[in-house]
Length: 350
Image (cartoon, rainbow, N blue to C red; front, side, top):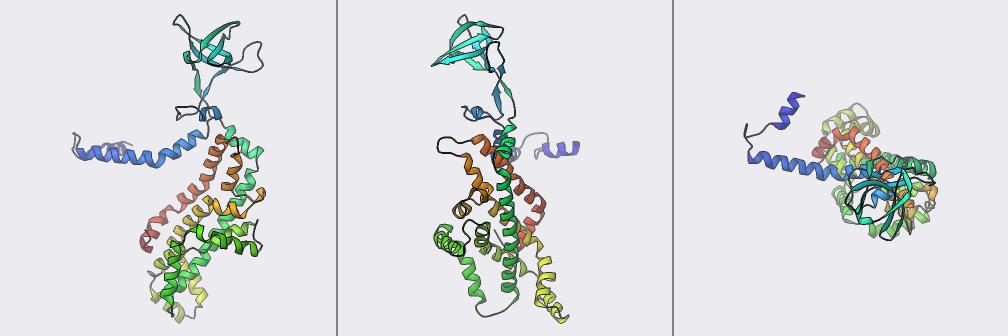
């Protein structure tokens, strides 16, 4: 620990601050806030009550107004710190509010009512985490069904994406045939075609094949990606052809070369594509929203939309379930992050 502290506090100017030390600290701290600030705010806000979320100015921690049970009242009353007409302050419970006038009572003497302007009182708050934002969606909504649908779509789409794209990349990198460059240019050129342009014909194809209102209708149109083919092809070009020639001399079939030699050597690039695919499928909203109309088939991203009604948006549930939907992507990134730098660097993808 002393070594870590000495590393973090060491300065270029020795005992004195050099201007580069200040710039470095500002740059690093600013980057830390920009990168993780929204995620921290999201996680803390997911524990706020609806009243705390609508409060302005917003607070970072989930504060709630303290309440007290008063004799003669069925429900607990909120506590406020009130500035009385004589200038003294007292902690009182709000009995009723009419316009800008609040009727305040002492919890020990509920018979005496003091009328004050709402500007003369401040709520007595404490930090409290509303864990019901997480528990209620699991018990009252079909959240587990949405979670299963998202896991199924993500896993199946990723597996098929890796299989199809690796086969295409293997053919484009290790075989010489007429039109090879043209095919690669056409595949990479599809990167410039926006999704909105192909959405209508894609919907027509899915509807004709009977995949409307089916999870396979969400999976299949997205499995062949030009990014994946390009990434894997660039990586497979770095695999020496002598390995493949040696395997052919040992009577290995083309499938054995692909499965037992090329795929293991392309593991870093496959891991990068797997991360990309998981993030794409897990966060996809528009295409599942178009294909799926039955609520029992909704994925998580579409299912979160049920908390947004025409007259009321349940932000506390949306924020809590958004945190839950982030967890699988974070876990995948943590387990596969060591492949990212190597895979991207060797495939030439920027």
